[in-house]
Length: 164
Length: 164
Image 1: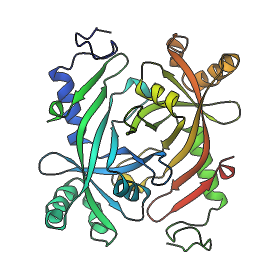
Image 2: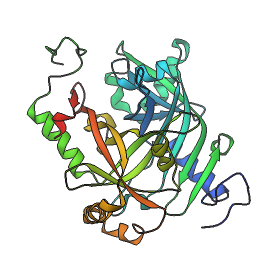
Image 3: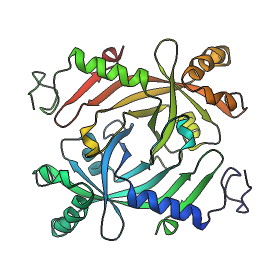
Image 4: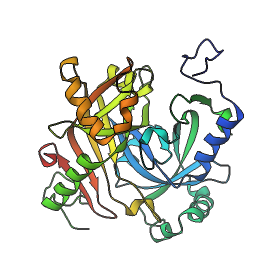
C-alpha cells in the first residue's frame, strides 16, 4: 500500500490520481442501479435499499422512487444518503471495485420533471410503465464526496470536485 | 396489490406467508455478499458499503472486516446496521427480489473466532489469505426485522421470528 503524503488522511488511502477519478466518474455515470443508504425516520437506523439509477443532464445521479417506499419517507425526513455502486462477480466479492458516493437528495421540481424523466427513461425504458404514477417522483442525488475501493489495498477518498 | 388485514400495516404490504419466509431465509443463508448500511461516526451520515458474507453455525450472517475500513469504525461506534441482499440482472433492476435485513452487529469474541472463521471460509476460501491479519475481525449481524421486496407490488415486512 502506498503512503499518502497528505497528513490528514490515514495511510490506507492512496493519493487520488486521474485513473481513480475516471473510474469513480464511470461508476456514477454508467451504473444502472445501486444500494441507497438512508436514515429511517423515527429510529435513525441506517437502511440499505435497491434503487435504479439514471443520470440527469448535468451528470447527477437520478432515482425514481415511490412515496410508498421506505427510502422515499427517509429522504423526505433527512436528505443525507449514500449510494454504493459497482457489482461483484465470481470469487471474492471484495476483489471487485465499488464506490460509496456520499450524497444529498433533492426532489426534482415539477418544472424539471419532464427533463428528468426523459433522461431516466434513456437508461430504463421499462420505467415508462410507472414513471407517471401519482406516487412516483424523481430525486437527484448530489455527490458530496466518495470512497472508491478499486480492489484490495486500493482505497481513495474523493472530493465532489474529483467526481466532476 | 393485495390488501393487508393487519390494520397497523400500510396497504402496500402483503400478508407474510411461508413463501415469503422461505425466500427471506434463502437470501440470508445463501448470499455471498451484500450492501451494509452503517452510521458514520461524527456525522451520523448513512454509509453503504460492500461486505462479503458467511453464516455462523446458527445461521446468523457473518462478516469479516478490517479495522481500517469505514464500516468497522461505524459499527464500533453504533451497532445498528442493515444489510441489502439480492442481485439485479438484465432489464429493470427493480424486477429482481431483494431484502433489507435490519440488524445489530456484534464483534465475535476471541473464544468464538476459530468457529466463525471455519464457517466463513467454507463460503470464502480465498479469505484465508487475510482472515488472520491483526486488523481483521469477524462480526455477527443479528437480524431484528426485514423488508422483503419480491418484485413490483410484492412487499413484505418480516419479524425476527419470520427469519428463523
